[in-house]
Image (cartoon, rainbow, N blue to C red; front, side, top):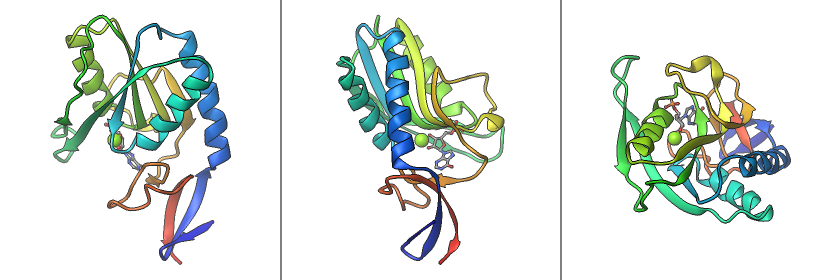
Length: 180
Ligand code: IMP
Ligand code: MG
């Protein structure tokens, strides 16, 4: 249990657990299509995970190109929800092996949007790495190729993820449980 700016935060995944899992994910990724690898981090939530994962890839000899795409969900309710492109990548994807990196796979809408866009643009292969999988919240037929941890059905923060713009800087993944 940590107290951060007056809030109690329960640790779900520690920095050590995350670092160990990132190394395992990197070696799984290295066994997949990774010849001319273009890694695309889906901002904002994935920036810390992506930064650690690409360095874990470097440790085992991979040298991916790294790009960033900002996507956001808009609309409410199950049917009205959609994904909007806020900032696109600059690189050409035609014929390349793409690895999409996101913090959490929940309904699957965000990553489905990104994957379909890459396939439309002619990517040779699109795979997906997520730190956390909220498997029971899926609304699209989409699974990650590489998944760090199963995430309980709770709103998590830290390690890049925020609630109302706060707590991205925490080195662990946690849940806000109340006021301290
Ligand atoms: P999906 O499109 O429903 O799969 O939503 C995935 C996106 O929702 C992730 O990229 C996150 O940005 C965000 N998200 C989902 N659950 C959480 C959470 O518990 N904390 C922070 N962000 C979350
Ligand atoms: Mg996100």
